[in-house]
Length: 153
Image (cartoon, one colour):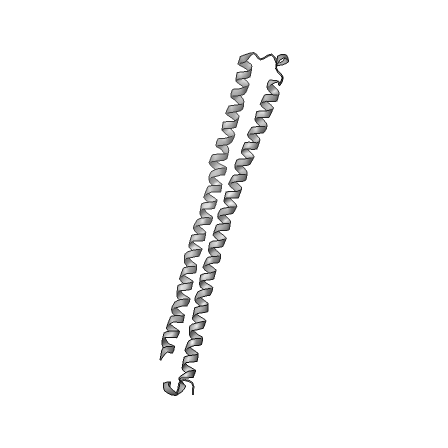
């Protein structure tokens, strides 16, 4: 009566597959949540901090120019052009930080999707093992119908 083991093994495989899928889905949810936390942290903490640092740097540069008594005619680049160059550099620095934040967020989301796909794969493998167990059980019953008696007769 090997068919009983095949049936039980099939049911067990299906349940293990469902359990693994739930685990992978929970892991994916955690990864997505972490991505959202990182994005919110950048927008609410890092971005304002970077902007404040840029503003301080720009203000300090203006004060230093004013205190130094720079003669605009004797310098190859005027203080305005130096400050404009610094403002451009600051904007570029902020754009790089925003780009890195966006890439990091997308990578986390992609990782969560891959984890969910692993879960779906585990559920599929469990379901496939269940069907295989049922087919083996049916084959065993049919092959041994004379031994088992009236199961299929």
